[in-house]
Length: 87
Figure: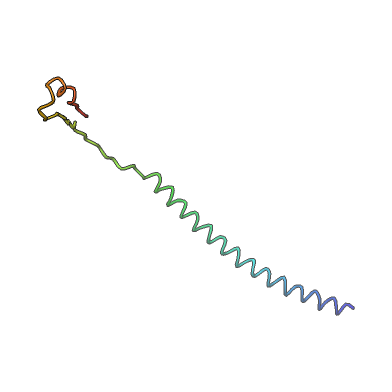
């Protein structure tokens, strides 16, 4: 009976050693991923801090459009009322 317990405990010990090794590898990958994320975070913070919106100065000149009626049937009074200036 003691021998059977020893075999069972030895088997469980081997299984636990395998699980421990898997967890250790997983932990190493997790630490590596965390380091990459920290670097990526620093890059993003630096990028955002150094971002300056593009400076663009719009220089608009006034545009003047005059509409006049050139038909002989239009009187001078109606021509002046047709004229419009758009800015």
